[in-house]
Image 1 (cartoon, one colour):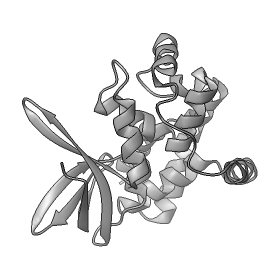
Image 2: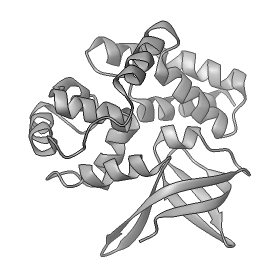
Image 3: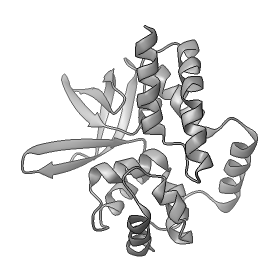
Amino acid sequence: MIAFVSGPVAALTPTAAVIEVGGVGMAVQCTPNTIAGLRTGEPARLATSLVVREDSLTLYGFADDDERQVFELLQTASGVGPRLAQAMLGVHRPDALRVAVESGDEKALTAVPGIGKRGAQKLLLELKGKLGAPVGSGTLVGAQRAAAASGPAPWTEQLSAALIGLGYASREADEAVAAVTPQAEAAIASGGSAPVPQLLRAALQTLNRTR
């Protein structure tokens, strides 16, 4: 198993990073949150999980070991493969998933593309007690919630950082975020959360049209 990769970032796409390891470019599938923390040409270290199939070898990358562990635990639930597990981490941080599962928060799971009401109910039953307690303390989680309520929406910061990481200027990133804000607000108004992966794709389409 490849536990991690470390080296300069050779290239970035909305869904993957290429890390140069010993002269070899390792393609690593990542969430927008992870991509947002990377910069082309700068050193990076990603915790990884290798998924082996009959016709493919796919390396998934994460910001830390905790995120990788949750990724692997999510796949112990029936019907959850690596792509859906990654989508869940693309919408929710590990601790947010732990809180959602332990509190039976069905809406949090249906906010993930590909998970419907029945699927969420099934996942809540199967994952109960498997993900463990939130890593952050209750005080820290409370402070994070308060900061989120008083500051910019977390999705705007994630999206802007991801676009800048892909090489766009801050001004371009701000304009793209503004362009997809109605889409994000509509998702939030319907009881879900802002779907960062879809918003990133929509923002990139907006930027491509303006270039």
